[in-house]
Length: 152
Image (tube, rainbow, N blue to C red; front, side, top):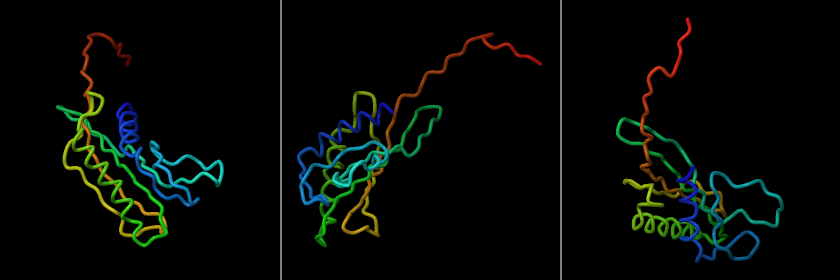
């Protein structure tokens, strides 16, 4: 969860300068939301554009722990070339992650970094994703003798 929080802060800085179209005719920077979009409280608040880091899975082995995080990117445009907005956001995030592969002095992004646009798009919303792999700290095993009493 600390990695997700650190990544959210990082992504907010990466996309802060973007002003992208919304379904309300206004322009705004993508909102960065961990996990899933929150329930709509009002139809006046646009969900799009967004950047959504989402924890997918993790794996521990004898040497290290790794976590996979999917970063969904959604933009809105009624223009047939609206997909380019999603690609621009994805490529900006990609570039910044490759330059800054270590976040919070604790989490390192490993390669490969993968990204794609989905083949089917829910026009006028354009969606793509980035798949990242992160190395996180592996807890150190502690062995204490006679801690447990076994009952038969």
